[in-house]
Length: 469
Ligand SMILES: Nc1ncnc2c1ncn2[C@@H]1O[C@H](COP(=O)(O)OP(=O)(O)OP(=O)(O)O)[C@@H](O)[C@H]1O
Image (cartoon, rainbow, N blue to C red; front, side, top):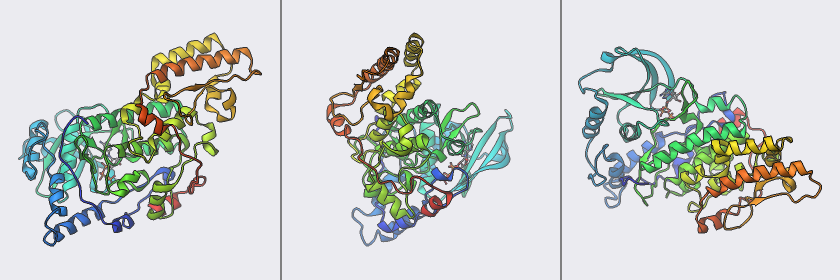
């Protein structure tokens, strides 16, 4: 969190938790979720009405910080309270879009390509270059709309963020012309079947790279979920939908209830949180990538939130038996309720599981080891907790100062297998040597979540999820 930015948010009364509006569609429904901001907006409105009754520390006074995230390039000390014009002015300068110009002057409108909560997303084509873009039309009236435009502008340029090409203002709306992501959404791709760990790790690394970038830029996304991860035609991921994103300064916390129920971090429900909420949500995404189901479920929002707050996840049985220990170890570190123990985006990126599957040098090392000892891939053993006694693994349950490896000393193993395991150990040892987790954190992290009592884990259907959210 390098940049210091203002931004805090109103607390929301508990009733809002019962008012999230569920939506669903039949595809990929076992991992789909949705949220509603209408209630959030309504509460904000109510706060404004209440302000006379509670002028000091009122919602309104706190909301001023939200509405006035500093414009791009401005100092973090820019006082709150500057209006929309200022932000639009900033956007105009950067996007070189004249205030008087209309979108029709520059683009030909095409078919709708997506429906968001705040309006439609359209295909459009530049009249000058012929290049196609996505155009999101946001209706004015909500602070979040202005904030979304400003934050997109702030983050635009990173390869993992949907690039904002231009912004057009009309009396009642903005048109955001964005880079077109023709590859669809990650959620739809996930519906096509379970991911190999190799594939999951590579996608997940890209997701974490962009989350890390957001955090370094002083932005908390607050709605990390596969619905908001778009793909280009070449399969590159792009983080989209900054409608809930907030600027946050180092050490600052947020308090507004915002996000998608299934992905929301427990501390959001308690009303005081930081950028670590994105790590939790990314952990939920990783869970879905690895085993195809969401970790916290229920038949009502109350149940989902209860699960988020209390359910102990078990990464040892059922589908987890075919997932590698390093993957489970990473997940446990992300889905930890103790925020100070939860790892950072940077630590996720240096976790052995990510390094093992995504670092070219590690793969080469592993391949060389395999060529030297051409037995049945030991990764299979490494993946299978059943063969734990003879497998190379990271013991996520141990409490050492540093992550350590458990290597078989099973005397019945044949020599070639041992050599092969040694190859994997070498690879993981290199990977682990890259991991730096501070000792106090490490000592808290070394206890993985205990046995599970997972709700609706085995037979998720479209219906129960849609009912739930
Ligand atoms: N740049 C883009 N390229 C292609 N499709 C896009 C793009 N941006 C958005 N979409 C499509 O439009 C849909 C809605 O967009 P988005 O999520 O940004 O809107 P929203 O109103 O913020 O949605 P939400 O209801 O999640 O708040 C996306 O799910 C996606 O299918």
